Image 1 (cartoon, rainbow, N blue to C red):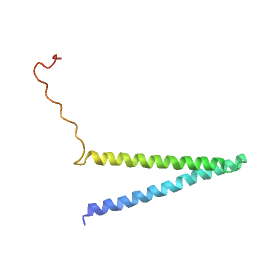
Image 2: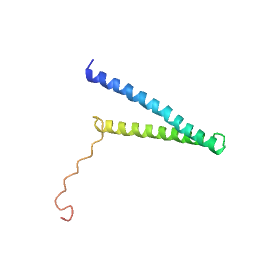
Image 3: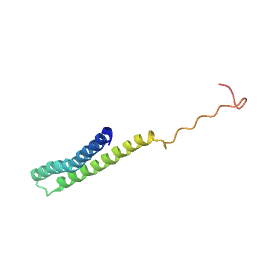
Image 4: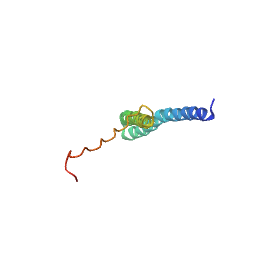
Length: 98
């Protein structure tokens, strides 16, 4: 197996693990700060739920946006990518010269 292919697979596993860890830990941290705010204000898990759910929704959005951008960049270099059509040459007398 090619060393470059092995490196790409290993980098993919590392990136996936980092994304999964970030997806779980970041909302938990924000929910904890919301919990502290709830305790300080005397509320019952209002800010903890709001902070946790909003952070989780943002993490989903960020993951989808990053994946979409990566796939668009990958598809732009692929053989099946749509190339812009060449502009046809203008025929004599087809319009005013500028």
